[in-house]
Amino acid sequence: MKYALVTGGSGEIGKAICEKLAAMSYYVLINYNSNKDNALKTLESLVANGGSGEIIQFDVSDRQAASNNIESWKKQHPDSYISVLVNNAGINKDNLMLWMENEEWDSVINTNLNGFFNVTSGLLKDMALNKFGRIINVVSLSGVKGLPGQTNYSAAKAGIIGATKALAQEMGRKKVTVNAVAPGYIRSEMTKSLDEKQLKKLIPVNRFGYAVEVADLVAFLASEKAGYITGEVININGGLYT
Image 1 (cartoon, rainbow, N blue to C red):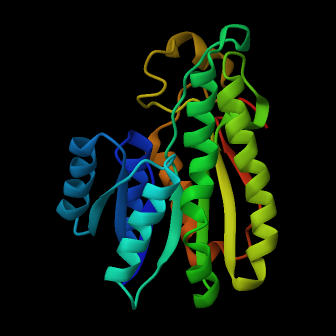
Image 2 (cartoon, one colour; image 1 turned 120 degrees about the vertical axis):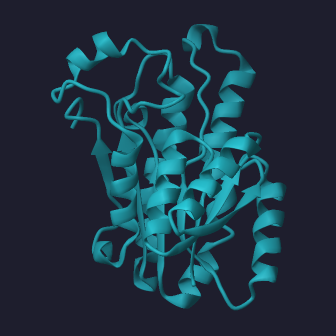
């Protein structure tokens, strides 16, 4: 059996990614922090469509909790390993930096950037030993372009982009690829307060994207067909920024 871990699997984009990986015959570990109900709904959706998986609770920003939970799972599955990791968990606390509180900076950096390290570092050795791995980091238009009011979020996502490029070079000989996808405006919990009617005028395809479109891209990068693609940041923003 093939195993995949998706952090932030209880949100719209996370759920769509979990569903796509399950359809590829992956047993999906659906990570969540506080929204157990939504994580269970994701799991129910997988099972209803013939997939399999389980929920796994930990806060990606808590290094010890992430390590403990991953090591516990590995001990329970000594003959298996997580071959696909999707770093999708993230939060935003938008504010102009002029007014930004320390907590708004720290929590966004800790969850989005440190969370990437906290989870990924515990899975690299197994991927290297097994000579196969796929790491896909969900970043953002904000990390590629920078957006006002998101200095903290932009910094975190840009940091992951740099880490993606560096880690890809470190792991390439082990047949482990590392890529990032950078969504623009996707219909989700994070964008529901935005004025879609006005913002879509800025987007060449004249609409917001859908979570399933991000999931399709992630699924391709997780597949064996994407073995010659690594260190890339692929924009999925309807042509808003290239």
